Length: 293
Image (cartoon, rainbow, N blue to C red; front, side):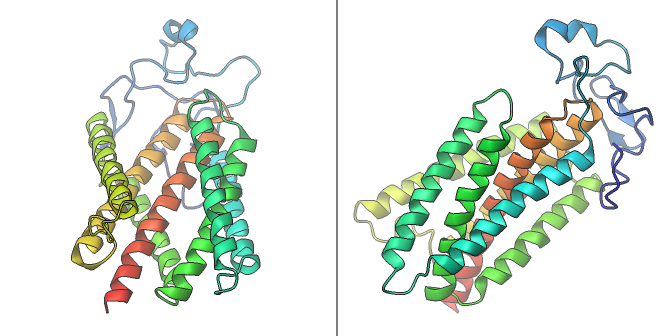
């Protein structure tokens, strides 16, 4: 798991020091030092037809002529995707004003961008292989929505909260990265199942809240203000942190098992989705807190 980035440079240092694409595959439940590694009996990136060929420690999921993904690949693709989100967010903040004369048009464009971003993310999610065009398209449209939405929150609800939300997102991400690196968070199948179940319940509550709000219940289920809103937002942040740990595990496995280089785009896509989730939930909590005080 070699990389020139100092943050990730010690990741996987206990694994074999062979060339890229020749990482040691440990059996299910094996350990290296004090850290569990290897959750698969066969290489998860091998094609079904070749699954029975991966029996030796040096076997990988690469096809002839392909290149194994590295941590640097993931960092570059993730920086590109997040940079696209940030750039379009800043441009939409500047070019789509949310004053009284333009808020309707700007918010309409933001909602349209959010729908396009959702469709692109769904298309990519159901594809077997990553499409850089789809992923960067999602990032661009998501950035438009975030820029207008953040500008609206900063203008009408809690001035200055956007900077706090960005710093809060960085803080949560750094905390998860440190906890994962120190193995305080153990990402297992049970952990993944629990996170998936919790996220399903969370999303169902969001849908119910939206329906109650749309059909005359005013404040919906009460997730937009007060103690209940703060609690719901904190749960959302914790879920985002859990998804970030799952993303880090995916990256670690992809590099350790010699996944094809294109997997870096999938990792970047997953990390971007999760960081956007965390930002929105941090923004929700800070907006409610500042508005109630």
